[in-house]
Image (cartoon, rainbow, N blue to C red; front, side):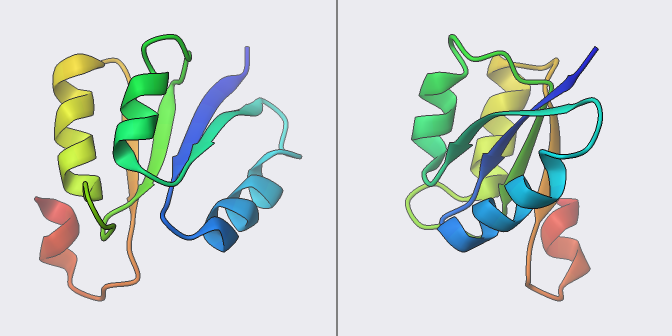
Length: 93
């Protein structure tokens, strides 16, 4: 059984790097890549994902808001948050 992963980041180069890193690993399947939080949330209505990897600091809808909406709308999806911000408390919210 594959672990289905959706990637959300406002920088395409980060998405491309994560995809390259993960897509050749056994049991991982990249099911979607998104640059905006609302695009991801809209797609999850039909897209089956087990994990969402998201940047925390993004324009329009940040990763924290995305994570909170995922928790409400898709509680079975796990979230991995990424940030280049060195402040630990940001990710702990």
